[in-house]
Amino acid sequence: MSVRRFLTAQDKGTGKIIYPVVVVEVNGIKCRALLDTGAGNSYASSAILDHLQIRPLREEFKRIEMMPGSVNKAIGVYGVIIDSFNGNYWLETEVKWVFVIT
Image 1 (tube, rainbow, N blue to C red):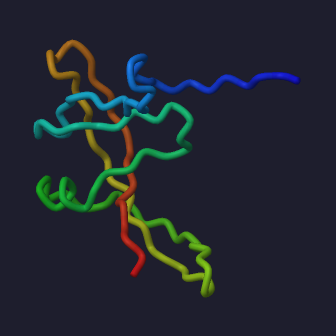
Image 2: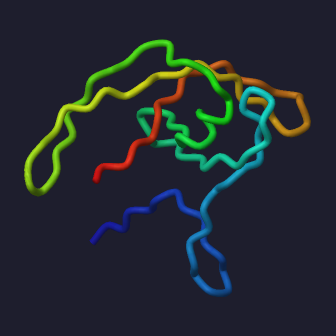
């Protein structure tokens, strides 16, 4: 029997999963970012995008599959600069708007 190991952070004392969250600046606004090295895309909340008052670079249309059916949704793609808290590193990248399906 083989054992598969996954890259997760766990507290040795309690075994609880620790989410890798870092403090960064997005276009000069200090916020927290959840690191997901396996993600195919980068996302930003509508709250931070509204606060930044920036317009999307473009829209992408995605088909969202759900239990009762599927919907086509336009998703905004935004250009942002993510800075390290100490200012030593920065990354110019694109993020997608996180939406809630109701």
